[in-house]
Image (cartoon, rainbow, N blue to C red; front, side):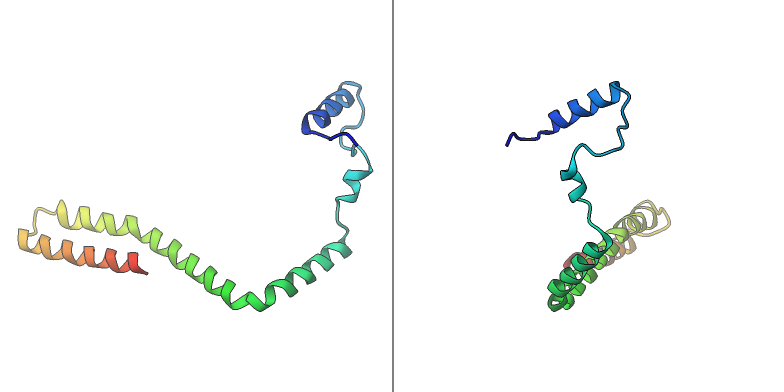
Length: 115
């Protein structure tokens, strides 16, 4: 059985398109068999759910940690703005106050990083 490469499928497609044939129909029955019926999809869903169900709490933990990581990544620009605009570039703050605020923000960043 010859290999059905993407190049050969594309060549057949171009040939049919130039001939004016309906290019939306499938090449052969093989492609039709790949389309799942609603009943097959339902069976797939049930089997996937049965496979994943014992691991649901681990998956929930992973998803919650992913969301926390996304939230922490969203906080970085806000902390950088607070450090640069509110502390470093603020001419009204004394040097000692700037240092203490930079230490505070650095401690906050280290805490967020360790999460």
